[in-house]
Amino acid sequence: MVTAETAVGLPALVLLAAMLTWGVVAAGAQIRCVDAARIGARAAARGDTDALARATAAAPRGAKVAIDLDATTVRATVEAPCPGPGRLAALLSVRLAATAVGAREDVPVGDG
Image (cartoon, rainbow, N blue to C red; front, side, top):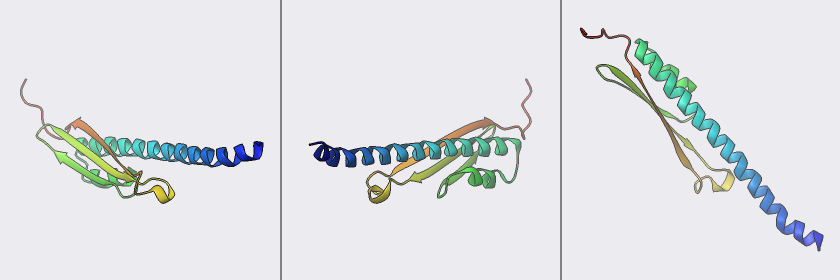
């Protein structure tokens, strides 16, 4: 009787472990997206010409990085795919995104 219960329960535990591992990987990728957006926004706010390259280097593989400059602010957006585990890659795929906004330091502040 114990063998039958183990045969039924063990695959469920393996699936649970795989899903938890995928969740940790997805959380790590989300943190990298947030960091990349922050790095890009900070570099662009300072007026660095390589802000896009810095953000792309910090982003997860396959991420799309965009930096938009406004008159007084800069916005960095990072979007990255996070495929699911193994054969469930297409089914459990999620899209991660992060945005950071900063005040531009390379433009003079108006009279005030």
